[in-house]
Image (cartoon, rainbow, N blue to C red):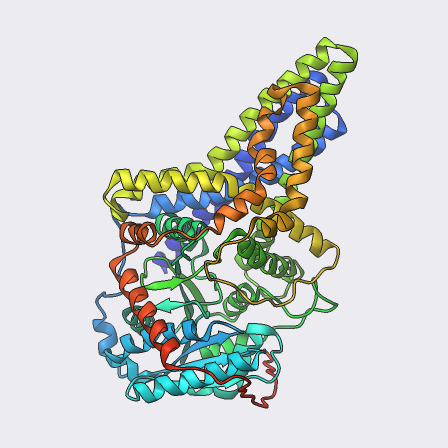
Length: 608
């Protein structure tokens, strides 16, 4: 009891710090900003901009506070591996079965089954394999894709009949997307399994990691969900390599900060997690929100809601940031990244309707708010930047028309103030990255020059990519406000380059207004007046080029050098096996044209 009280007390202070620091930083920033504006008197526009600034800095401060907590709880050279002492587990006569569930939707079947084959081959070497079955749950709407999925399952079973079983089924109707797909599996087969590991089509996990997760669930009966930290294995593009480096360098430290704050009310990220099936079936029946999409209908970001419902049901939900051997992939370019963000944004905005749901823990409610705030911050910043540019333009027009010394002084003060603000924002954005890099470079590579080069390249790319992503997120919020539904789209993870015409077509609404704004400021106030706008409006103007560069495929030597420098030996080995398996399956199995395979299965209904 004393230990529990001590733990709860520590959790309170960690959370107080994480929530208090952003408020303090935002309040101080707003005060300094308002003080500078007060030299010319305060208008309604000044107060409005200050309010937007406070709300925008609040979000940046939250990210910085999580990173600082992650650094504080990280031991020097701390790096975990699933091979730990499991003597307690070995004494337990457990034979509960575990399902590895892979929902798919019009995916590259060769890649999906190549990953499955790698995991299956690894598990076949472990005693725990006798407790494991694979379930490929297809929601694919294309008959040719579904036929290949079915034939690949049969092929792998015939090729290695002694490994874990593979079950394949295709739903006739993909009601409620991935959540409905998993719910239908539980309704049909969930009673046969004590636990299930939910994977995405691009998930890959080592056999030791899967074994460790099952054993943790064996010895902790109160644990409803254990979420691993999936490390990104990037596509062979500029964005893919940047995301892979940033995931390897920063994500574990950020995850340690989150885990410390969340305690037993942790997250579910929808994949690379093990779940107690009975707990999930009893607690996680999802409602269909009243009204049409985007605010109503099926919940898109269902994973966060499911974690909250498990916690409401008294089950422990925990993030394990130290467990290695868990991987995922990411979009190959910024347009793919923005498309995925659009779906997440809509789902997170839906969460606002669930904040007041009965019985949820305070932290679950806060998680809903923070998830929505992650996207609402984009239009807040965009509004602040637009209003600030307008105010600077107004002041410069006043100088030009009246030659007023006070207006000239105000315009100059605005330029200095805006420049200092931009510096402060970049410190909040990139300061935690630098702090983590200084702490982890030796652990990651041991080569300071190689790490410095990669770190500088990542910062340079994100300097240009962050404003573009902010614009796409702001548009997503505006589209949702106008009632536009994003639907359920296929994810593209391959590293094909984008044509400039496609990038211009996707970004013209960002770059053209930015060019006009820069020209207007330079024409009225001169080049010096436009300097503070360049970090944002300059990048907006270059957005088609930024998107195109993000999609450029890197040469194999550069890609291999990146993998050797920052990927673990285990990651390199797993993905070498994956590439071999994918090539083998693509050669061995050809699907006849026009072939199809359908199944008449009742849509899922999981009441909880």
